[in-house]
Image (cartoon, rainbow, N blue to C red; front, side):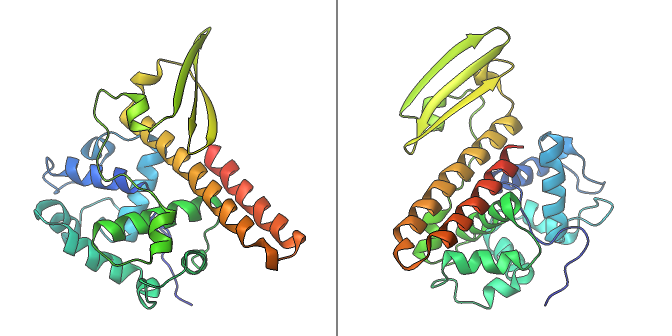
Length: 253
C-alpha cells in the first residue's frame, strides 16, 4: 500500500475555495510564504484545509513557500491541463482504474485506503470529483451525478433563494440571532445565525454551502441504498445508515 506524507493523505478543501484561492494568488508575487490574505482571507478552518490541499498537491512546501507547480497553476491562462497532470500524479491509484466506468462505492473505497473516513472522506471525494470535472477528466455517470460542486465564487451581494435554489424561505429574528428555514431537494433545514444571514462572509457562506452539499449527498446515498436493499439484510442496512449519520455529525461539529 502507498505511503502518504505527514501533511495529509488527500485534498479535502472545497473545490470552489481552491479555485478562489488561485484567483486571489494572481495578485501575489509568489516569492514569499503564503498567508490567508494572499488567498482571500478564509477562516482558520478553511485555511488549514487549503494549505493541506496545497501541500498534498505539492503546490507549497512545509514552510508555505510556493513551488513551481503553483506558479504555473496560477500564472498560466489555461490551468486545466496543469491540474489534470497534478491529479494524475497524486491520485495515481484512482487513475489506475477506468474512471469512466468506476462505481461511486469503489471510488470511496480507494480514497478510504488513505486512512480517511466520515466527513473527511466525503469532502475528499467532493474535491477530487470537482477537480476532475473541471480538468475535463471523463468520469462515470454515477460519480458525476453523486457530487455537486461550484466552480464560481458567489457574488458579493447574494440573493439567498437564487444561490441556494430554495423552494421556500423564511427568516425570524429571535433576540440577537436570526433563524433561517428552507427546503432544498425535499430536505428541510433550519439554521440560527448571530447576525444578518445575508451579511455572512464569503468563507462562512462556503462552509454553509459545503454542509448543505453533504446533506444532499447523504440523502442521495441513503435513497440509493434503500432501493438496493432487497438483497441485503436489515442489519447490514442499519450499519450503513449509522456510518452516514456519523459523517453528518462530524460535518456539523
